[in-house]
Length: 57
Image (cartoon, rainbow, N blue to C red; front, side, top):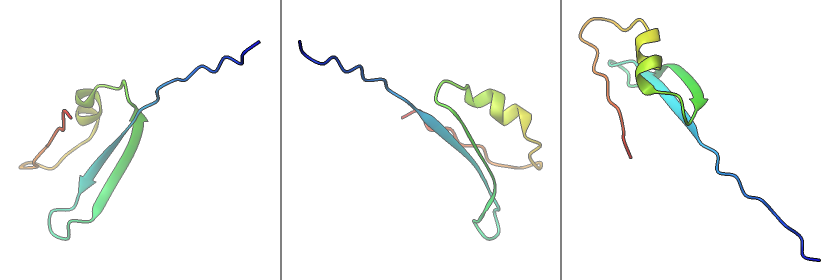
C-alpha cells in the first residue's frame, strides 16, 4: 500500500507600523492569513496623517 500524504497550505500576515522619521518598526503583529486587514487597521490607534498601505498581492 502506498503512503498518503496530505499537504496543507498555510499563510501568515505581518502587519508593521513604521516610525516615519527613522523608518524603524514601531509595532508589528502576526495574524492568520485569513484575517482581514481592515480589522487590524481599525484596532490600531494611528496618529493623524498616517499613511496606510495594503498589499493585495
